[in-house]
Length: 172
Image (cartoon, helix red, strand yellow):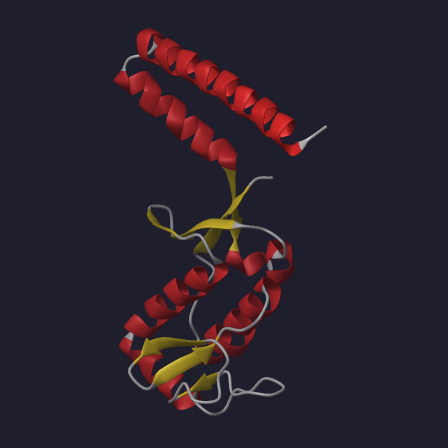
């Protein structure tokens, strides 16, 4: 089969799918009122993800895609990467004045194999994330390592309670 023929077949399939999607949209619009459509969206979103407690352990998130981070029952922040989950949790921790002082006191005292994890400068870091002025953290790690560092080496060290934090992960 030549390339041109394959591309034409793919184009025909896309047109077919586009027509079917158009039919589905018309059906949903005609059969359901706005409240029903909103309920359907909510149900599909709930089946789209699973909510897992952060305290359940970093290993359970390895290889998973995040969709959001939840603080308690009603406070949700939609995020698409683990680095953004990391940033959001650390910003919440840093917002507490007592924890801010504890984080500042940890600078230079937590190191990885090659670099400082928490520092007053981004120099020497591969992927620095600024948490506050003169407070940077290294984020060049995989999901499991990043979350383990967050929980055991930072949040536990400053006494931040993360038992109320959950992460929404995309179902496969």
